[in-house]
Amino acid sequence: MKSLLKCTWTVCLSAAVCLSGCGKKESAATQENVGQASTESATANARQAASSVVSEVQQTQGKIVADVKQAAETVVADTQKQADAVVEAAQKAVSNTTLEAKEKVQEAVSSATADANDKAQEGVAKAQNLIEQAKALVTQQKYRDALTIINQVAQLTLTPEQQKQLNDLKVETQKMLENEAVSGALKGIGGLLRK
Image: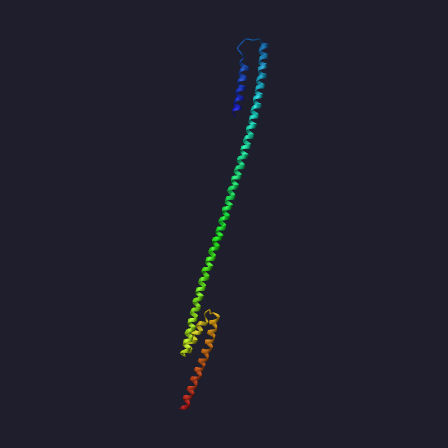
């Protein structure tokens, strides 16, 4: 920009010198030679100034292009770094979320398993208690009450051992009930015969 101003001033001064002359009265031929020499000198100065301005503009343009290219490369590198950081943060977040979800699922499964085991143990204990009650009723010869409890226990989930105990108790209770019925019938027939 400064070079352009210098060139403009140089051209203006050269033109002013050419037009004004020195103020002496010279002959027409001398004035014509001086005017022609001044014009040639001014033209040469203008060409040289224009050439200098073009050269400086080209140098400035080259510097601007290099600066813009470097700035663009810096922006691209910074953007790539930021994009890489965002991708890394996203991957870390996904990994953490997946890990947290996996842990929560494992906790839920463990809790559900523990609850199921607790309920199963409660069911086993309840079934065993009812089996013991039925055995006590058989001992007391309350076979019908014992069969009612045995039928309730059959509806529960039992261990293989409890299932065997229940089946054996049921068979025993049914036999005792049949024996009692036969015994009662025989007593009734015996009572009729004595009369």
